[in-house]
Image 1 (cartoon, rainbow, N blue to C red):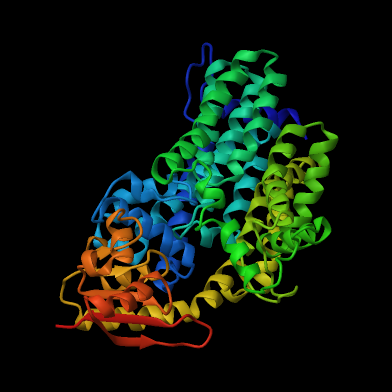
Image 2 (cartoon, one colour):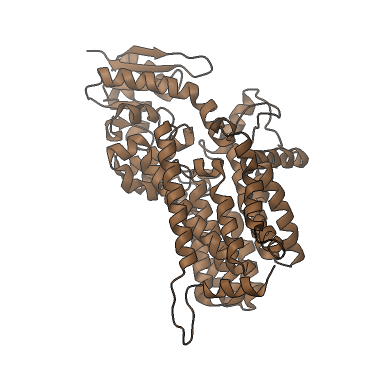
Length: 524
């Protein structure tokens, strides 16, 4: 796996070459960057033209959170909210200020696409340093860039690509630290981990393991301490944010909008428990199914074979790091906080299949190790590994076979239908005066209708929001209301019928399998 020719190629392309030769440009990395940029731009254009940037309800929510930071009755960082971590929204907020970028979804898709390019470059650098083989590192990037599920998630306002950029940066810097321990490398690794902790919660799970690795690899306390201080600033900041704005540092975990609270309400209504809740074997089974559907059986086979080679070669830290995100999800499933539904297992539907992306780093790094090992006897080994990995997608050359796209398409059909109908109504009838509505899926109506969020009163506009719900006779000044039947806004409208102001339901949208949408206008 460490042939002399490939090793020298790797060393000559590391970028900075000390000594008489001086600095030389890293042409291999430059080619990888250009190729990834072209692939990412093409994928973004394709999904934009297909109209599927905002199929995921979460994508719409991320986009609207970014928009309300800069477009709200009370704009500012308090609009970040709770539950979802802030970095993706902060990256999208400057772009979301533009109406076209907001309404099209590009404001959130562009940061994801750029993050995919960054992720691929760090993956290339990490694999090259780890395997001492440039063709194998290129194989890793090719495996990443030919996965249609990942390309879709990296082309829409979602968080997976941003987290992968942070993850692969952490991988590269920890591998580099093993070769050249230094405080600056530890700080760089801490910054990469910090970005991950502000993007997805599995980033929090990585911190103690990475800190322990730096302690063992560096054999000194200082680098590990520097890493832990920098990396832990993310969770500390989020706890402080939740405490300052909601009075509870764990609001994101057990507040009314948290996954835990949503699950408890579902159980109270008699719904069945999530698959894997309290059952380790079932949790592993469902997560493994999601991983295979997201990665494809070809990449899984190559990745498993390469992972064995990495273990035999005692390259254990990259394996451990790549196994941590999957372990986080299995633990979350067993505790009932992160369900996954796959179409061939009960309840035979789609939900959170994208969590299978957490195994992609393991499979692509394993595929690169397999290519490096096979290249000893076959020059075309990298092409063979890539061909095996893409075989499932070539065999079913349709986006209908891409589980993440299919999930977003199936689960959004009804939501997109009532969003379109409500937005059309408001475009034709709304002429100002303000709208009160719960922030969530209903906000997609205003996005599609082109109504600025500063025209709306929502849960992010405290304390006016609470006052309008509790005393509509005194504080409900809006001319319009958009509500789910029976939600707090609809309840406030009903309460106001006695003491005023009085509203008339001018539009009701009732579609099978969806909540009833009610649009009210103040009566004069």
